[in-house]
Image 1 (tube, rainbow, N blue to C red):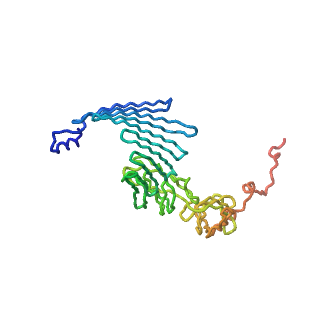
Image 2: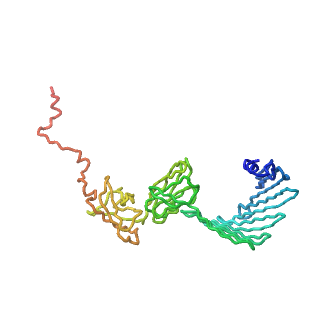
Image 3: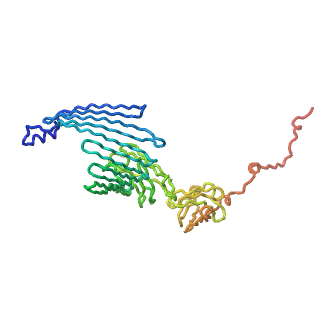
Length: 400
């Protein structure tokens, strides 16, 4: 007898009677995998006794088989037979389940239930549209009439949304809408998000002001809101979690600069990580200084947020990313900003035909300020003149 049953019996007026309560239960279970024929077998027997009721026996046998038919692979067939004996009565039945993959993201199914009291048949169709959307429709018939039910599930960045409907002929029609989500607000910002465990650990990711940037943890990516914030809820406590920008789903005009972050959170903690994303057009440009020269090879180009947009190559050419109309660019070499270039507003339609960017500032091309070059031999050779005549070698050794 369980503690709850004891308390209920103690509070009952007929506390000395133990009617309908469990007394003993024995269970025998056996399972076997027949790998040669891809069959799994499961057998279960349960015997239960009660204080003031007849004993009950349950028998259960399940066979599962996985096989292929032509190009259709991974078909699953399961047959479950059962028998229940109680109050000198017997209830026998069979459940049949068949699942047929149809393409990469679709499944056809059949479920049948046959017993002494009721028979039913149901067919179903399931489709996974993408990582965020899936639905299923079931139609069948039982002894008490036709049935129809289905659901549609969408994983948004801010919530999980489920829509369902059920119909039972001659009985009822119902529908449902379930929205499950949460909100996190911190000093660094906040966002609406899906929920995993109420009050669980989560990570606030900040990508600046860039919206619709996909951030992935261990499940479906979450997109940043209009303020560049997203909350990742599928994180583990006391474990190094890694989140990253899903570069395969980035908008066409966005470029990830710092795309991976790690965090180890305690239970119920809210972490914060910053990532860098450049949003804007890409262009091939040519930078010219006020004297007509070009910045040196390796000069760096930054925007007003000190994000590097490109590195100058030969002849002042540079491949730029993340540029926007009217933006001012800083060209840096020798450890400081030497000049600034302004992007046109609007940007030209063809950005890969050598966009010319005059760079305004006091900087001159390095070639114009270099000293006159001299041949290496001339630079390190000195000419000496002497007023004395050279001494003849033979004078040192007089003859006798």
